Length: 501
Image 1 (tube, rainbow, N blue to C red):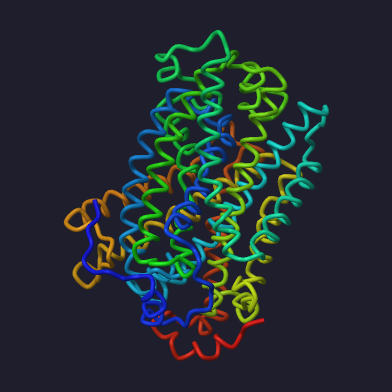
Image 2: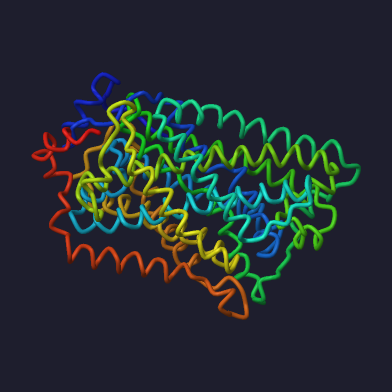
């Protein structure tokens, strides 16, 4: 799909970064495989598919989950390919907001950055709280542990602290963990699917797996339910912008970062389809699985198919994959905080943009990311609906931020100078399809998912979107002059380079 116009070898990365207006501050030690692995780890089929599998069981059931995965994956490939092309031209840690700023101006960059930041922080919260629920399910099977909201919040806090400490150790460790994560995810899928296919004596039919419809949303229109059900796949297929956020720490970033985006999507697309088939094929009792006492429907599938010991073993595989995922998302979010602060867009930017002289890691940005994620998930102490809102926040922040640079690239036409990774003559039709899909998804994620609509079932995603846009607007009015667009940032680089702790 892509073709090369020019070569940007690894030795020229720093020169290209200076040309884009930034003095190198981060340590460039990540390989192309490491860059791919961080996006693959953030997408994490063993996190997204597993965490929202219960949602899928009630929002259309197997038919919507399976065919939705195929269809959504195809559309996300278009979005990712269009975004990869722009990433190749602007390989910086700021990623989406930097692209929007260069292609559309200061206002576009400002709001894109705030949306992207909301999505990334919501991603950490959704991933790590999801991991906490799986750890609670494992403890329930092994020790009779009751996963109350308070206990889950304690587990969640420990996970966030773990991810902060791992990220503070430096990008080399992050890269190594992400590389391990790729093989852990792929091996885990093969182990889970193999066990679910070979051990149980009875399975659902293939026609049932691809054709059974189920609805517990309270809505009666099957088309509406099916559209809502697509959000399970869409939530999983998010976070691939991590390759762009880590580009200033990647060798040959103008090629490696866009390749990392596209490869992470298609590998996740294929492996996720296999995983969903294996899980659904092994369902024994649909109602018991959807209403399991463990709180995690995949755990009930494992339990019915393999017994307690087998279920515990597979849950450990899933939990470790989710921990890899959360660690990668923390890395991506902290680089976004660093880059946005480097351009003066966040309150206290002078603090958040500091990096460690020893590891080259944006230390304060890592801590800000995990603390903000902890606050986002705090309402889960009172209602699990709040956790569902966190996953919606991830989509409603992230997805529009993906489309804005693509839309601006379409608007720029010949004024856009491609990097070494380009879609060529397919750029415009793919870009148009990508923007159209993002508009559809943004509408879907804001629709009510349950009926009747109550305080517990209300979809808070539109409020979260409105709140962050309001915050961005107010802060721009108060301190917008401190935001120095990348095009004008070069004059400040000497000053910033000295801010090493």
